[in-house]
Length: 127
Image (cartoon, rainbow, N blue to C red):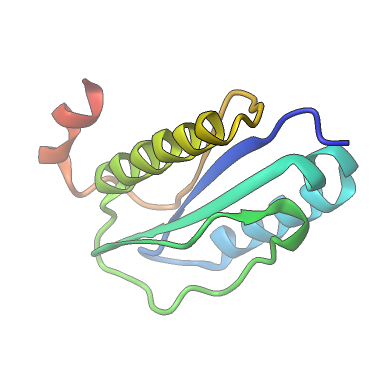
């Protein structure tokens, strides 16, 4: 019986070398698969950020499988990725409340090897 769901957003940097980021995604998968409660209770959304931001749909932890992202980018729009992550977490929490589902504090993981290149977006995220 699931006591509460845990919404998790994983921000994945597609700029620069992706070997370390892919390794981190696989480490996350192993951690989820090794934890029975986390595997059953987590809802995971992966957001790729580089030159653009691309969000996947939320999936259950039991179905989470790392996958290679389509192409590397020259820049890292982390702030835009954070904005999208916060928006999706808010929508997920609203969905849980509407459906009467208990949920735990959301988690936000950032897997990055690059620098932030969208500085102008920073002030909005800080709010």
